[in-house]
Length: 238
Image (cartoon, rainbow, N blue to C red; front, side, top):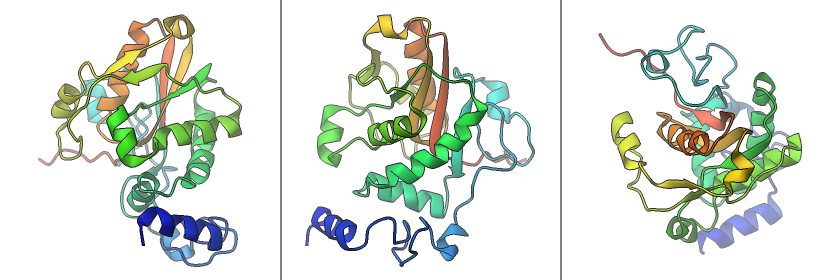
């Protein structure tokens, strides 16, 4: 049986409101069963005030000190690891309904940033979108818009070239890989606006900075970033 058909059957007979979003066991109302919830680390303790990633102490991480991000502030709901990573993997592979759970978590975190004028999301190339069947960040942005009533501006940021898979690349390699791949459209809508960028995961921040650079160059007043998950910041080994 094809994966898409299996996912459709699951959503009909085991809807997301009644099963754990990680393991699929019946929960009757909760998104996560107690066992799986214990594997999800929520970003509600020590975080960097700029990138929003989990840190050992509540202070600016060394990466943000060395190279401040172009956004004013980033927020994320969970740490990318264990249960959080499993949720992201499912979201990217056919379980689009997770957008609502993800959006609800992000909406809570957005209370710490100024109200944006509109939301944009990380775009995919036409080839990548066709291969996956949907852009998960687009689904997430529109779900967040329904909760917050902040409009989404589709097509403001477009991806104009294919890039190498980011996984496994260093921070410097990721930034180089993304050079010139995003373009701003409808610059009149961007000028003087406070804009929130949505993605599913924040890792090194290369994607966020690449999009912020395009928006700020087009006249955006401020940029902010929000994601469901972010990698934990770990101190360099001595």
